Image 1 (spheres, rainbow, N blue to C red):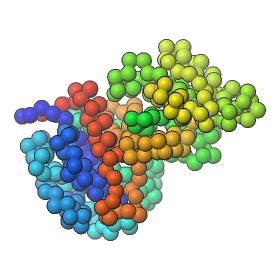
Image 2: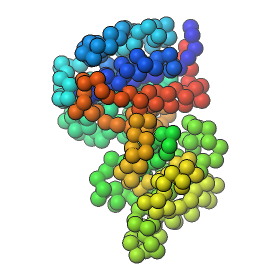
Image 3: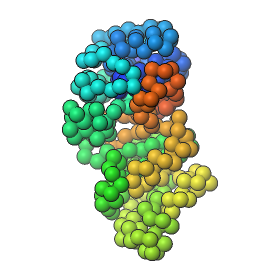
Length: 335
């Protein structure tokens, strides 16, 4: 049996662009990547292919290793039938269970080392929450499946890499959640996985401030003096190359940011705004701290353009490439 890398891709929100961008990646890049398997409804994939006039051959598989033989000629699908027919742009909670099943399946296969890595297509959180009340996104859902308490979200692109210490929280809750322990643990995990996943021998890490002008010696806030600077001192004792806090209005300037492998940010939008502004189509979300390799495109479901054939597949392609490169480094071969 051939030895190789296999990626499991979740269905994402069926009413969004997930099926379109998956088809486009196979159509345009299948000769440049290792095989992937789409965990979703083959009928919906065929419907999307027909609507967009792609004429892409799709084949259901029963065993993961079948993809090695067929990938160049067929898009392999692990069959997960949807509960309700899909209308593009109009998500339904009737399919929430199937969306979660898609995630559950790829995580299970990756945990058992039957697939090398996983890529999760975007979902509508509010739709899934109707069935899964505590759902706040893929990162913590997958972490819970794997009994991981503190996953870290790395957003990376060729131009910049960022990590928010707080993730999907309202800004008011995020501000209350910032503490020394969280900054230290997030930076430690980031440092560790930049070595494991990306081969950085000694990652250069910058930490952004919370307040204007890094607090300006306490005039505009005490968090830098009381929380961030003490946290940096603790991190430095562990022989980690970390510096800061840098004012958030200058650290993302290319002349400064290019000196660092990653910038640790204090809240979600402080991290996502710069990467989506500087390199929107090539951004990838990499979850650090899991026992499996998981990436995802750095964009949402794009309901407004679903089914129109105009969605860019570049972020999904980048997600697959990064997941497969990491899997190769970790020698997660399937045979």
